Length: 412
Image (cartoon, rainbow, N blue to C red; front, side, top):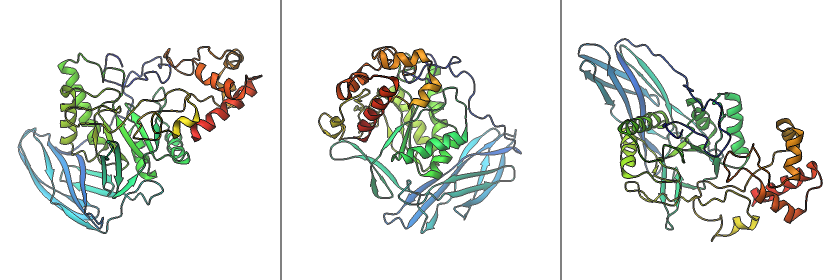
């Protein structure tokens, strides 16, 4: 990840031995009769009363034959008929825009707990190919409020974004049942949003978040080549191509509400420009945010976010203080510090020697916490346990006190 525009694990977990080499998403081979239909999507514009939606369907038509051709593409969007003609030279690719149609009394897509999650269909066909996509009808804004903080509204209603960072399988193994359980657990925790920092999951993930009403903030990763300098012309081409591919893949999903083109550091204009160009060319319908920290960029301006942490244990009263504290603004990443698992989990994942070290040596390096020397021990967390509840007398006593420490901090 330090030398390639790919995914990495930063200081989150120990690096997998294979460094995630190889192709980890499905590879699909599609066959067509000469003119291919790709990239179908729908631009949605709702009136102020949310009683009418203007739907504009688009599709890319690509002529894979050696001669010019004219075809009629027809189909339906939300059950309404659409048709358009396209003429293509040999090898030409062209975006076809269908005449806009009006959907009266649309069924709006809402986050979980606010309403339903209905989806509509886009179906297109030509003499040589066909295409089907799903999309949702909802309005979304993510502007800055009077204090300069990012504030979202969905279907004209303000929504408080409450979320967490997503951790996928370290070997990138896809298990739909397990992933759906984790997405549902987001709602069980009282949260409504998942942030994907660099680890942009397969299509099935976004189908789940659409269906379950869980919001997603996607974006690139920090602390590796995505944010590093010294890019070559090939790197810029890969980055822009990656942005185009992800924008085209995610734009139809109503659960996706933003894309962060930077994380800790805002991209310079040389990077931001191709990112924004790629997103705009893909008809990206959501806010483009340059950075997750309290910084600005030449094109998209202030982020409206902050990321001062904390990343370690702090007293619970911290979270109720506005300055300095947690109760203000849009904090893009923060935590109540490390979590010690339950006793049965610890016994499944650690040896007897490791368990003894866990409670008897508070400052020892903990392999399972982080590969980074900044986060690879529990010194601060353990000092809080000792100071608030006393020194542990056994493993069971340590875990009980750790669970209480975590509970009161997460609750705050």
